[in-house]
Amino acid sequence: MAWDEAERILSEADLIHDGQAVDRALDDLASQITERLEHTRPLILGVMIGGMVPAGMLLPRLGFPLQLDYVHATRYRGGLSGQNDLQWRAEPGTPVRDRVVLVVDDILDEGHTLAGIVEALQAQGAAEVLTAVLVNKLHQRKHPGLRADFVGLEVPDRYVFGVGMDYKGLCRNAPGIFAVREPAPATGDRAEAKEPTQ
Image 1 (cartoon, one colour):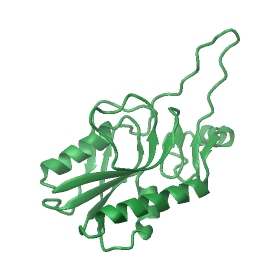
Image 2 (cartoon, rainbow, N blue to C red):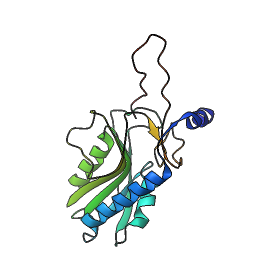
Image 3 (cartoon, rainbow, N blue to C red):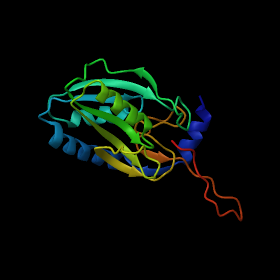
């Protein structure tokens, strides 16, 4: 664990959305989800580990009966960039056949993990699979055909953490959404320094 590095990154990070903005986004997500799903007896699946925090903040805002379970699939394995293979650590324990399922995750970046989860749930016979993410990262590298049904906030194409999202496995508990500070370009270098893809 890079504890010292994480403390430095957090102290230097740029705040993108503060806690109040996150709360407003969660209220808005809850309103949209309620309008769409309150009469469907949905199964809500939180995506571990990152989706645990926004899902835990979102669920008390949903004032209708629902069932809760989780899935755990990853491509990051504690690193900064996604790997090509999707690793299943836990599939849902609740049968999804003929159910309306809402998958709740922290961020939609390139979307390969979320797309793999959606495809697996559809293959298991779910009647409908919808997705909700706290954060959508703005870039053109998205998995083709994947678009979240419910989005709370948008962030620039930078490495972000907080409210479930991590920096090398740490800082998921940061109370807002932060971006890793980008290093200044070298003198005479006009190329923008880029953080690794999240």
